[in-house]
Image (tube, rainbow, N blue to C red; front, side, top):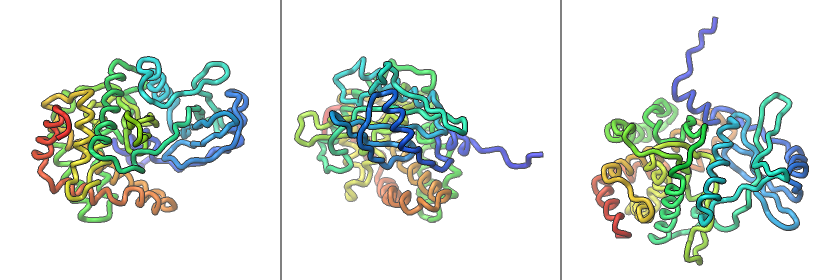
Length: 359
């Protein structure tokens, strides 16, 4: 008789999100073989560090491509969702600088690799987007607003998009935040646990009662400073949008909440300033409903707290990567605490001004 306890909701969600298994790098020679056979591509490979996929930069004689091989735990339907969203934007909003999917010689947008253990992995090729990511520049208020405008345009363009897998389970989706409170126990620092519980309380009191009322659609899901390519000398500023790996149907306000979370604490003396500048731009293209706006800073705090919690949880499970994981999110708890110290009523007042441009 199996006496092991049934997995919790959080454990099932983390597993469905591909966060519970160790990564086994794919053989680059296997990737090379399929690229030559199906895409007629060959050249010099450079492996890039990413969270889950095997990712390579491929330099050919005439161009540069990005090659991604999905992790074996990620369902083929989920990969198809990501690809379909990118191709939808390319066809319905070609003016947006969304990374393009390259087709095989036969016109397919992916190749399924069947491994010896029976599992499938999906190989895709994209145009390589050259330039700096937003995380590596120091944009002012207008630059951040331009980035916000781009996400607003993407959300408007995705408004009618649907896909059979768009209701996937994803731990990073903020709508599940209140169901992941058990992750607090994997955080060793008492002050960090206290901050996390404060955010869970805010989310439970303000967002959870309105979850079913929030406007929903398919969203990008991870419009972080590492997925926004910029050119500070360009009038458009944003020159590329990459990585649709967290595409999901969720509340629309959770899309700008992700970059807000990444921008919290960037200016320690005014921790919400840059996040509010981003939202100012977002609302130029897609105004947020008046009653939903007060929920946005709570959602941003939830997302930042979620990243810190998942990082600690993963570091505990993968001691060989512990130092790398904790370094990647080393300021998260500091920024949560700084942001909690500010009156959210004041933040909401600032956000309301964003309807009329930068304040």
